[in-house]
Image 1: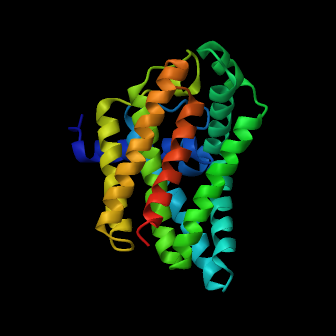
Image 2 (image 1 turned 90 degrees about the horizontal axis):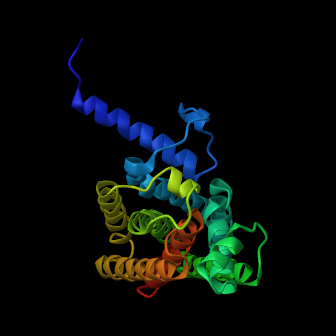
Image 3 (image 1 turned 180 degrees about the vertical axis):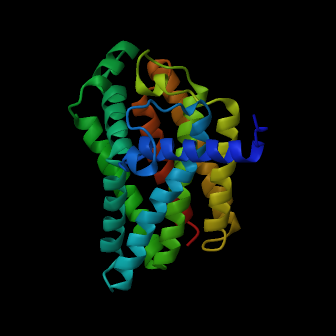
Length: 268
């Protein structure tokens, strides 16, 4: 029996993790990437590549912003279509999580009641308001960035999407499951190494996209603010429901991305 090749084994593991992460976080069918659609993903290690998937989603959305801008459409149109493209690509997965989380946190007085509301598929007042402000803040920030250049907005969007997926991994690792049997509980949580690798990947993506377009100070300050917002949301989640659910992971992604984009805009 031939000796195992560690490099080849690690490469195959990376590819498997990337396929699983893409299938989990986007609408890209698992079969297209050579993965079995009936298999349950394991993100104990695989969550390390969530920021890569976020970067891909942001890159596609950013490409739409650049292309529409090249057609001499106003920034508001190019940004709106870029955000719409990302929502279609992810199936509104994180937006749905944000709405459910806002309804639960805003409408329940106990952890049990909040979880019950979050399980209800109907959207309430708090959820609708959260969705509106998430879209409005991201669109307004990208609009301001695109007014100074579509490529600048596109690269900042890549950074925001990557960093916000790393924030998801951080929350997933930091909190226990609020209820047993949920998908976030069944497919994870990521281990510490996956979390740290995910943070490192997101940091590199932010550095190579934001520093050349907006500057070093913008990259550092916006990352710090986004990290602070993600940490604060993690603490609020722990107090509200005693742990995390898949919905709170999506909510974390949304508020972190918005915080990053708004912070970057301050340096334009």
